[in-house]
Image (cartoon, rainbow, N blue to C red; front, top):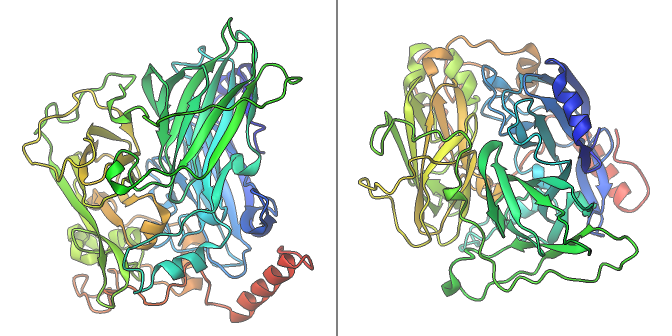
Amino acid sequence: MRSSGLLSLAALSFATAVKAATITYDWTATWVWASPDGVGRPVIGINNAWPCPQIDATVGDTVIINFTNNLGNQTSGLHFHGINQIQTPDMDGPSGVTQCPVPPGSSIQYKFVVDIGGTFWYHSHNMGQYPDGLRGVFLIHDPNDPYAGAYDEEVILTVSDWYHNESLSMVRNMLQPSNTRFAPPIPDGMIINEGAGLNVNFTKGKKYRFRMISFAALASAMIHFDSHDINIIMNDGAYLQKEVKYQLRIATAQRYDFIIECIDRDNDNYPFLISLDVNRDWTNPDLGPLQWPHNYTGYLIMDYDKPNTKKDVVQKWKPADDSHFKPYDNETILGGNNTNYDTLIKVDFKFCQDVNGYPRACFNNLTYIDQKVPALYSAATTGEDNTNPVVYGQINPFIVNFGDVVQIVVNNQDAATHPFHLHGHHFQVLDRPKTGTGDWPARDTNYNQKPPKRDTVTVMAHSFAVLRFTADNPGTWLFHCHIEWHVEMGLTATIIEAPDRLRNFTFPQDQLDACNKMGIPVSGNAAGNTQDYTDTTGMVTVPPTIYNGAMYAGSSSKAKRSNGLRSRIASGMGSFFF
């Protein structure tokens, strides 16, 4: 069910004309051998194929994914990035937060209603798995799309850094006391549309809506089109007033929708350039010369008989400032003014070391540590104590009340830019000043009064961002850096939203079965204490010194069988599929 990259406007009109439907997918996660950049390696696919399939739905549809883990040696799960999960917080997908990891041989069903239209994606939220390939496009078509008549065709454009080694070995090498520079794995290259690349059949008089998605684990990407404007209309599933831009920077997990027009003067094949941004901060030359080692040139093709030899040369990358984009609906600042909010969540980010000297990433000097009981399960089973952050252990919990206007301030005290993502909400970006501004001053009043909304924001180096949202979606929502390697280092907080409305939340039996198979308690505080919920005995307070990622320890024979099969496929002697 994967898109070919182009969708006709007529097909979209038909799709949006029908009433809300139930869209069902039957997926089995399997190991697959792939070589999207010419170098073969095992990847995680769906139904014995990779790239993973695309999800297509219309606003109001119910999406059902029957998910089976057939990886043999790893647990798994799915997160639907940017989907708000209204009234379905148990379907958000991060293991250890809203569900238990799905062990090999087990199945669970994800079922939720899609409430807004736009460009989204799904991926594993389970111990570094999505850089190993478990990710895909998720499009939600909107019958009320204000730009529905403004383009003729759609183009899917995914970009990702790419690694020749599996995540498990790379994270193990990263999480060593010798890594005093907190260096993450460095990508071996970049792939476009999971290795398929992109050339667009460019016809005079037509307008093309590009849906650009970053699947990256670390690096952002820059994009520029030769001789053509970028008409930006949406970011992260939030409509914008159309603006003409010339360069964009897309950070990990972000999405941009924009229109490229083939006008009367066009008579050639036009290149576009995508450059992987592996620099710590592209705005700061003091860190040394900027490097752009991984580049891709695609073409807007008007004449297939002409050779595609022309290159798009960018002398200097100066991408648009996305913090100044204008919301389509002109919604004003939540709370009505700069200082009117109910709850402040202020997090200071910097790298740190745990008590054993291992490199970690910290919010307010604390690294996120997985606990025994998923946070949503604790919220549902600890009664009136579920408003006490002590109940949840060291997952950096913040309690917010239903209806609160919540202001999040991120102070990035690192010398590199970092993208931060909030589950369960779009937030307004009130302020996101330039590199070197320093920490947020509480009396800061330089706020955009009609701020853009999105779900992933880049925070500049040695600077800050001010975000706001309304707490109208009860759940346990992660707020984390979307550099996957930094998630594994602990750069995550948890917003416990409207816990009084989560008491006695009922979980589906298949999720409880997965927990039971994993030996994970499904009630009590973070340690599984069910008598005294504020008793912290047994809570995990120190990260493990041996990183096992998503490896499944429940069946050593099955893990050995998986490893054997992976060795055989690597030598061309067998199959991953079991």
